[in-house]
Amino acid sequence: MSYVDEIISQVTEKNPAEPEFHQAVREVLDSIRPVIEKNEEKFRKDALLERLTNPERQIKFRVPWVDDNGNVQVNTGYRVQFNSAIGPYKGGLRLHPSVNLGIIKFLGFEQIFKNSLTGLPIGGGKGGSDFDPKGKSDREVMAFCQSFMTELSKYIGADTDVPAGDIGTGAREIGYMFGQYKRLRGVFEGVLTGKGLSYGGSLARTEATGYGLLYIVDELLRSHGNDIKGKTAVVSGAGNVAIYAIEKATQLGAKVVTCSDSTGWVYDPDGIDVAALKEIKEVKRARLTEYKNYRPNSEYHEGRGVWQIKADIALPCATQNELGIEDAKALVANKVTVVAEGANMPTTEEATKYLQDNGVFFIPGKAANAGGVATSALEMSQNSERLSWSFEEVDRQLKGIMEGIYHNIDDAAKRYGFEDNFVVGANIAGFEKVLDAMNAQGIV
Ligand code: NDP
Ligand code: 2IT
Image (cartoon, rainbow, N blue to C red):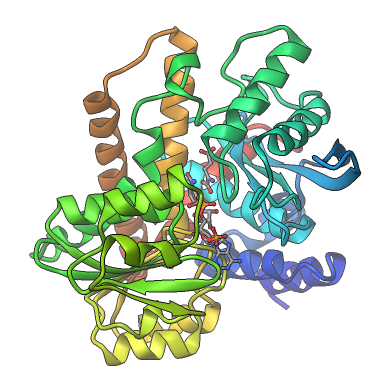
């Protein structure tokens, strides 16, 4: 059996009940086969892939907090410090009832290669909890965040591990966590990114993932003699990534006609009203059913459905495995030209293959949504030099990083004879730097 296949089955056997982690490992290892096969015996002897697929450290802890009725609630917290070959662990904290160790490991594993692609010195990690911020009072969210950070603070620091936001963790949660870290450790340092602007946050971090997604799509189209102007796009999600993807797509002259949340979706034939969406989601923390009050011409539907709408560009920005084979078939039938992942692993393996086989340009999340973590690394740089850069400066750097990622993954795909396969390109390009750093540092 080849070394890659051996490790894929070992990971599956040794980590039962972690299907998302298996999926992420399969996708990466399948892509880097040509690199591994060139030097298979050396890598096997060095147990390179065993080291790559086993986190350096995984922390699991109890998070007790008191709800508004005076009852004690207990959640489970996680931090997986996956790989620090190229820099301190870096990656978000997900707060969602579906969170378990396998999900955090899949996200942490993806983060290693994504962070490498940014070209910045950050290793891969991820954390979170099965706590659901939805429907909780501000005081309950604060109680949870303080308890979560009380334990997490033992393992993180500006030069060791720097968490950030992800699903369910936005500016409010980062604020409460930062306050508790500072109180416990007595240091004001860049231990978290996505901070508020008054206490060390970076301009453009809020917008960065969504904006970066559109910058890379634009670069792909331009490299093929086309651009975004005049295109129709479908977006899923209505959170941080989706909102700023819709905003930038609209600024670049596209019309985005859908968005969604976990209960339903909106079709707005005139183009999503970003100001209305921000008010509903960022200010009121309400459901998308409210959108119709702002835009009487729009439609609200329960359940899922955005991938059935005809569009040139599809941007899944909600969660993992939200775009399956039937969705891919509908997109292809409607002549979609680009699918770029704003979320992490939103497209199933079968759907990805179907899109690629049918000539759709497919940019995987680790390249397409890397603008968020790249801008987090720019926030770390600003914190280190105790300066703040202008919005224009951060945005300019973000755009340059996304354009660089496009050309880097395109070149890697071509070098190995997989032209236009950006999954292979992203995994190889991300892996090469990590491999070099791991080799240089010996068996650790
Ligand atoms: P938010 O919490 O801001 O928004 C998440 C959105 O997705 C919400 O509209 C939410 O709906 C929907 N959603 C979440 N879980 C599910 C689910 N199980 N089924 C259906 N809909 C769901 O998160 P972000 O926008 O920050 O994150 C979205 C994706 O982007 C995630 O995959 C994340 O890992 C990824 N990402 C985020 C980055 C960032 O900087 N924030 C950077 C790179 C990637 P509802 O509100 O109803 O739950
Ligand atoms: O998935 C991701 O890249 C993020 N949630 C952002 C991580 C970060 O450290 O900014």
